[in-house]
Image (cartoon, rainbow, N blue to C red; front, top):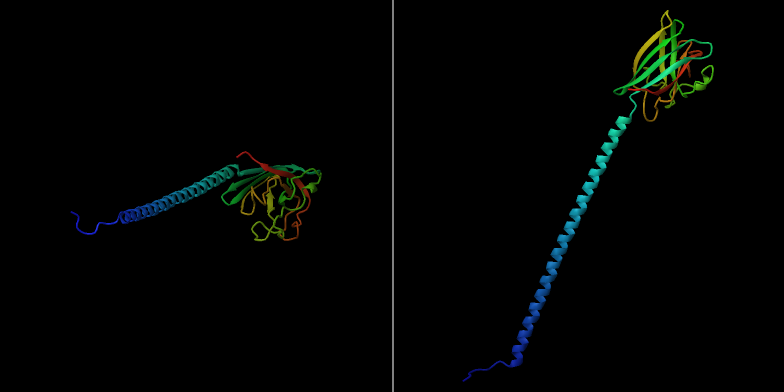
Length: 225
């Protein structure tokens, strides 16, 4: 025999329905939360992937830059030479080498056919010795637009090499290291002319040092190392 109040059928159904709704809502929230977590993981993976790609790209750029620097170093000119021939009416000839040594260029000159005494010699603007008197070589090589001076002066033409001394036999030898001369890049002496003069360079008269006529002319070219 039933004692008490028996719940109405519709009340039981309503409670069951509410529970299903709550469970469904909880499941939905749980699903959305899982989706957000997954999305965050995916985004994090993408960011990590982008960072990795950037690192790889930077590493590749650095590698190529180092490779280019090595290639430039290999291609850099280490030695140049000028073979001098006499201008009309003169007998001066010889060779001048230009060799890279650290931050300087070593100049070694060996000449013959000179009158005994001091002779100015300079690098000139153009590698053109076609004129009989050497005038086609132009003026002193002076890319920085400096006044004429001695090789040791702070202000001087890049082409100011000073003087060379010839003995009684007409031969002259000179070795100097010059930190202004360049074998590559802006201000390179490659393709320029070299002139030996009849008179001494007084190292002060503008713009040529009053070194007189041009007795020999040569063009600076790349030499075999």
